[in-house]
Image (cartoon, rainbow, N blue to C red; front, side):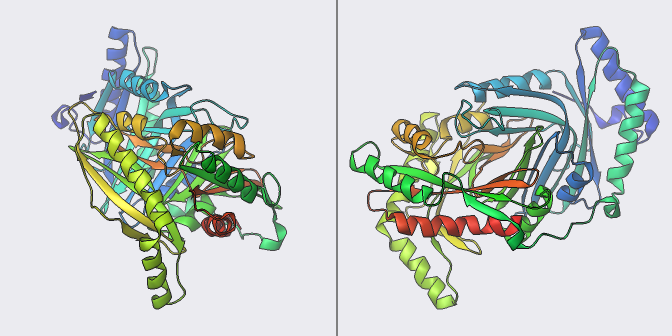
Length: 474
């Protein structure tokens, strides 16, 4: 990618924009290859979710992710370049796709704002090949036309434009200038107000696979452990909700981000009338500058009604042999994976607590210095899926998950996120999530099963995790 010096296009007006796009068109003519013009501008306060609502189309690709407590949000919509992949090479194929685009990209504007320049949004399903559910390709990546982001009180808007040898610079400039004026003074009154949510009694709810399907799956998993096939396996439960009217995924998402500010609220659409939303507490990996940040998040218990009860639950979690063992599997896996690609990891010997409104987890932050030339997707390739959503050993656990669970996971427990031109980015684990299409939603959550697991106790715990989603969808 070529960063254009601010001195070349001093004028912040329509004429300056037209001159830049004309130069991009001329470059495309010389090379007989499209160019991407990426224009970044600092703007006043923008709510990324509200902006997405204003341009949302259920049949177009979009991405949104926000962590309210960390004061970070990013959204992109209206794909200008996109691609899908499948198979074990999908992570490398996404990287090659983005590199090809960046080789023909010119970036200009406020190159100091958060999330400046072209960002690629990507989602990977749990398995690298499609199962019965073909709602999403095993790998999807796109470059958006419009992108907005914020970090620590600074807001930026990015326009990405494909300029072909045959493009009309005037037409491109007029469209981009109109969008810039909209983002510079965004009118929130233009966003459709939230509809009244239907009463719970108007929704039909059922467990996929039939009542008791999750308990039956856990019992099968326990048999696999007893036979020595694996030490740990994660089994998920899926609840289908059918409403009287079309569900509003972004309205549900707003509810989730407000109630769970310590989680990553996210929405992804592959452009097929289906949206995948959630509020996940789990980061898979973040690459920022010279460092890689990840975490082990496994082992959980409910919150208490009083401070004393809550503290006793927390102490019980920290001292639970089952939960500590489950957590250790994930820590050891991440450590081995990162060391396999040349990193020295740092983490505390004992986990701390991540306390959410309805559940608390064992959590171990993990940090490593990034080897030169490493890309975010290089770490995703070795980490996904961790034992927090898969199992140990991995191969037999993943085979039995596909066999035991009475539904296809699709994007559930997959990973999604963003990366930039420098290989920086962040990917999260798509748990506590729901697939929404029309008036139907499928909500997912899972539990780690070990040798001493009780199916009944696992049933109580997984329902606790589903609670947040089902309340938002109501």
